[in-house]
Amino acid sequence: MGQLDKGLKLVRKAFKAAGIHAKDEALNILKKQNIALLVVGILSFTLGCSVKSSKSHKTEATALTEQAQALKSALSTGGLKVNGAGLDVLVGPAHGEKWAVDLGDGVKMVFMPIAAGSFDMGSNTGDPDEKPVHRVTLTKSFWMGRTEVTQAQFGKFVREQEYKTYADKTGYAYIRMESYVQEQSGINWSNVFDRNNMPVTIVSWNDAVAYCEWLTERERKAGRLPEGYEYRLSTEAEWEYCCRAPSASSELADTAGDYAGNLDSMAWYEKNSGSKTHPVGKKKANDWGLHDMHGNVWEWCYDWYGNYTSGSESNPQGADSGKYRAFRGGGWYFPATYCRSANRGWSRPDLPYSDHGFRVALAPQL
Image (cartoon, rainbow, N blue to C red):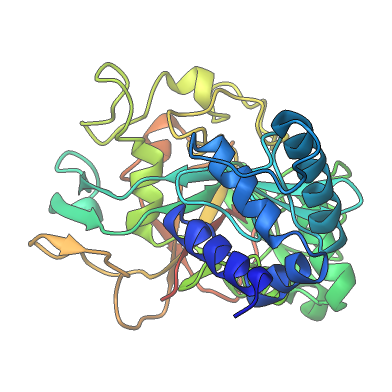
């Protein structure tokens, strides 16, 4: 085994120990650029280990600076990303770190890290379908979209795939008219609002799933998908865990099934919305760094809608089958009680509504 191959082996080992996923093509870039051993040197230097400069005629500091620049240049050729220390070589997100997906033309999706943990799901003081309260454990960490999917983000998918939503194909959708919804023709996701940072609405559950599948395939081809993970709708359990923000300080932690903080500062709802949807991210985030988990628009979840179990569960995925899909979070028209963390809604997966959107999770495959 030559020196470069030995260097690559050490790099792979170092990346694995750091929880960094780098596919073979990315490492081959290092080999072709003849800098695998330099990567090891930079890693060792950053970690406070011994360093042997590859350019003995120069000072160690100068050599490492040049090596770091060469590393950045080579990685840039392969579409990889390096932080200022020349250490984080990422072809995908690192667990516990924020992650951004660049969709091009200045459109990005930001995902916040969510630690594994346990919480009490449901409410004994809410609607019948929120009972019984039961202990849920999410055994693996994941990432949750910082905001609801926007028109700009959804538009990238539609244009790239020439995708037709349910409203596009049928010519109608269901529009929120104060206390009722009304079937209306000639309206779809692109003409209900004219602002890119508005949450996309008039998308069915099926449309939301198609978007997630596109994003998964896109990032898998680029080598930026952690093994065993996919972009998808969150389960109801994952969604409620994120909404409650159980990592919050005790005065904000949602232990009563209500809100993860002051509702007026965190949500657009009946009291303060002016009877309209608002741009994402304008209200205060919860302790996970997630915006608009309460209010603004309802968010489709993965699960078939069904009754809760009475016992403890790990990674629940809802009913095995059903007629309706679940959605969560409340919306601009609805009073505070509908915006509670435990509140549940349901509808047919093929129907689009003007007050329904969705949020994407990067989470374990289901």
